[in-house]
Length: 611
Image (cartoon, rainbow, N blue to C red; front, side, top):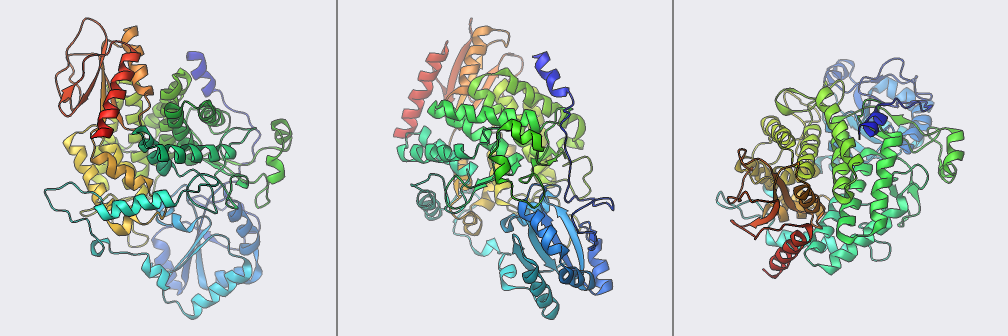
């Protein structure tokens, strides 16, 4: 184990040309092809005072280091003489690396990368555009804005007053939940949105929607054979996006199938694929899924690991910025390495590391290889040493001028909870609770949900509650059953249960369905009683975390002087290691070996389905 950990501390001497395309602190030495004719600024509210002074608009170019079409737009559109003149004459230009600013990334993620947002000098949105804009179209757009700077109707429609769209019929005495009609609507979208020909959800772009795949896995655990077929079909399709040479997984495929990949590798895709493939292996026992998760873990080790043990952010889709790299990715590993490797974004963000730690914990739960747990702990220790804020929060990167952001503390809290779930070590649960406390103190949004960042005195791009973050938060804070954290889960669910929110993801509705399902169900609560030095207790715990269940509370009680968190009944201290399944205020007979524990869970599953 020690030798393994040391290998992660060895500096990687990969020969990289790090072309960081856009950073929050855009410096004069920051180079992009032909972009020096445009003066790019940071995103800061003071820029709008300057715009008012100069009677100019503000154009925000929201991009990603790994994004092919961002590179193309930079080389073509922002190098075009007519576009440059219009921008310099009438606009103040701002460039933002969306990975460096989670608040802006999340707010405008529906517009994809690159996203182009134009504001008036008061900070009001005029237009928002998704994806690549060629020079001629951009010039026409800029001229039109100067001629008529009124906001587009589409931009106005984005600001939905969810208080006017509620059919949840809730009151103070009931827990927030999807209405029966809205739940049925989302279930219909979950089923009809599945692609029976190629697998997965959605049509033109094929990728693994993590929460929707997990919802299908959750349903399959309860005997839903149709959901099981959908889950396995989605995982089988996603196998096509694995890179057979470097490892890791490409972001998505176009053309409605799984064989036209876009080659960027971003951390969320790696971590969540690792997590879902590990869950899929636990449920279906398909070795291909375990191999896929292990391939991703190896890729993280080889390409996205810093010398100190933290994880980098992404790897570019292009070997040379703005040039398609299909031929490069068709080569074998040795042939690729002769040409070099695509740029790696070496920022080490708390959010991305939380995602990676969580995925590694799921992989460890699936296969019991201590390498993955050691790697997760190494990254967690690095985050604790280098990214912590007072009172349990986390900053995004080395500097965090616009933070803190909900995503960082939430991802790390979820990571700590996963470490607790796979080790039974109370220190990780304490860290998760501190993260939850920080979130509760800093990110509440009125009566509903939690915002992506503290609003403070912001007047432009004001942080707002986001669907994906509130799904994760509801599931994270609901885990222990503690009343304080359950109240946080209820707040998040109050936001998610609004029709205008729940309908945002079209067919990718699994996250909202998962949050609603888990907040109104009692999880399987498996507790191992016995010393951590006891081999039988360790075997029982190892079996408990590997059981084919997506929603279970697993704990290890090894000290009778320290009570279990939120224990439902008193558990006996027996003469030998034992495991108990508890639910609704009662516990099973003890199980003394993994086979007996598996039978207990099977019995409970059948009873739950019949009820």
